[in-house]
Length: 136
Image 1 (cartoon, rainbow, N blue to C red):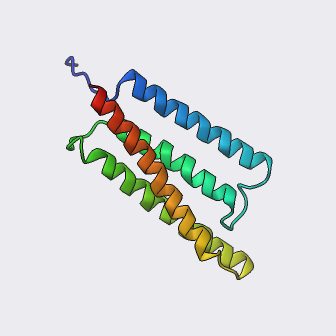
Image 2: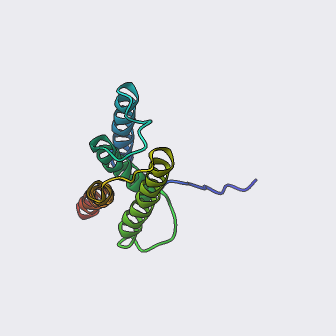
Image 3: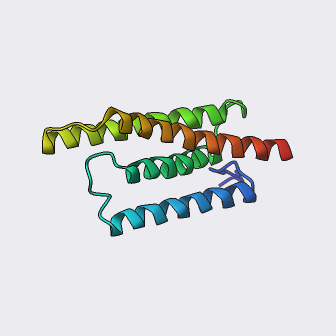
């Protein structure tokens, strides 16, 4: 084998530490949801909004860690787009399961809130990423 150094992550130790801290906080939120029986709910609740936010921050941070060829200024926008799309798919899945099980759909305000929490979570990571870039 040749001495090719293939790295999957394009990150600094400080940013990786922040990403791991976000991941740990998300696991704590999921664990609390599991303990209080909120994870098996098919409808969107205030806990779901918190989970959307936590997962959006974590997912966008991990996307920013990945190494791929893209303009560094556009990378955070891609991360926000990905977390909003994943959040919309997750919300749609919750809507569909809730309708199949109960015949009711969720309140549109909570559905919009879930999408807003996805966008806010991505924007938090976007702001932290730009603060890291400005320090270089």
